Image (tube, rainbow, N blue to C red):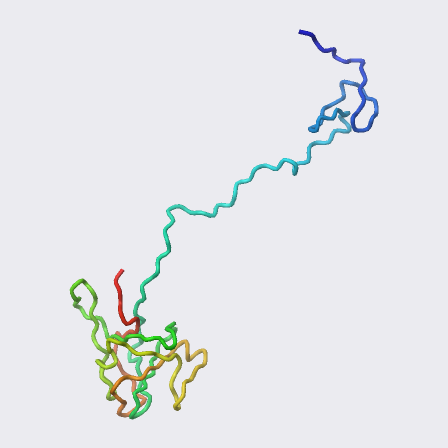
Length: 197
């Protein structure tokens, strides 16, 4: 097999400048050009970018989002208040209730210590007050509510009133005196039908 000469006295022409240089001082660039070491230019790093791993966006053990069941919202102690004598309008104090205007909700009294068949909770009725019976407030069909406060024969619909109060008109019963609070402890408002998990 033939050997190459060392090129100790040889000269070479640079592909970049066209000048003559000693053969032993020549180097090959990434593009194949033979140039003097003083003219050497390394390959631009952006021509051959390093592979980069993508951002981690997925997680392990993913589950489909579930829709939470609607639950009752607790009404503060004696949160019901009659509007005026002879009226069936009842204002309800419920700070930050988040209920929807015009939607039908059911009122419930405090939870009872017994459960029905199938393990569903039982609720009592709110306490009677000012001529309004608790059984009528806790009607199974519920009542359509209006957010805000009913005062001076009209709805007060300021942001504060809408967020913290609502009212409804109870069937058949009317207030005896008016502006009387009642209902007792442990009352709640929520969907007409409660479902278990």
